[in-house]
Image (cartoon, rainbow over all chains, first blue to last red):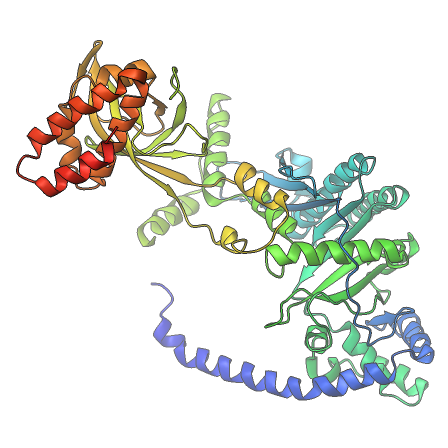
Length: 394
Length: 195
């Protein structure tokens, strides 16, 4: 049996109608929120309120910086020469039904020397984890979130190594895909592991800061509501009532309006928003280490269609106008080639990705090696039967 | 044309009468339409063929760059780093067995991943001393037969240097005989190989 499309067609129609209605509802709210941002563009009281809300009420939102909330800033001119380094990773998760227990992290990198005329330097660094300590965590098979966190750390480590080497020769922009913060705060990762991963991650950020490398992360089509949360705070005349509402009202601001919708019609192509600081919470660790995560929204679309991305940078980039302009200009230029997504990140992904065919070949290699070593290597009966059925329905 | 054999690519798929090659190589010398190539067959013979099509497959990622005014680094990346899939089709026109040349189909085709190389200048001259392969090319359904035969003859004439003109005259006479009942086709072919 397979997915019987005729049985879901009615639900698909409903889904489409609901999405369209929701979009119409949200579209009505957008001008209202934009008006709030304009009215409070340079409101120092709102900034203080956001800080207080974050510190006292664990508020999750965007804390304004010195830039006006309704800012729409054009990129500076792209330098003639600039080295952009990007990295992305992929993984093979451990499979308890496979011929062998292991996992793999593969990091792809690209060094793109704009203006040099030279082909970029591309590389991969695959690493196989097969020993008991790596595959088991407290006698439980290593979890997906832990592997993801190790992959994120490996990505930052690799682009940092390259950036620290290249910074002697050229201006550098180092770019990651997704968020700049390491997502290690998962239930399936032990506290010791979380702390160790974050320590290692922050050490790399320290090195980048010391070497003055412009680093950032590009998040395509963000679904965050951080600026919407700020706008909701601004609707209160009484700051105490605002703080109290943070505590009692946990509903999404403006009925779930995403920041991307707010900025889609505020920013022209290539323009960025003001820089905001991510309120503490998960940002606390980075704040304390001197790398507080800041972000801006950027329209990487064209004259016909807005495409809003979020660019995250550490505070030492956010406060350096020249570095901020450099990463802004670099991303805009990169997005004109591969529309709406930096070329270097698209290529880093292409380099890193492990295809199904490569995975099969790699697993055959492992099975062969195990057999040579006298170890029986075969998938579980369940995996074997499933593979037969998968072949039949291909 | 080189005095030596140059690598072209590896066999992707094959049959007795034709085969296709996958390659990343794209240089001035290879691959060339009408160029003579050879590859080992499992029975120890060498299969001789003519390149009749070079296909650069569509790549949606590259499509975005068409018409864009991009820095040279992007172009260099696409051409040098990315696995641009080039597929070359070859029409089999003969084979070499025990050092002897035969201008008819071999007993076995090459097998997947066998390395294809260009025929050297001497090998092209030797092979084209005989015109039996003309009929194989003229009858080919999958290839642009007349263009292919003309290209192979120009290539063979070039290999002969100063005696290339005489070679083309002899080839023209042979074509006149083979295509005596198809004057239009003959005229088109003779125009294409005119010295």
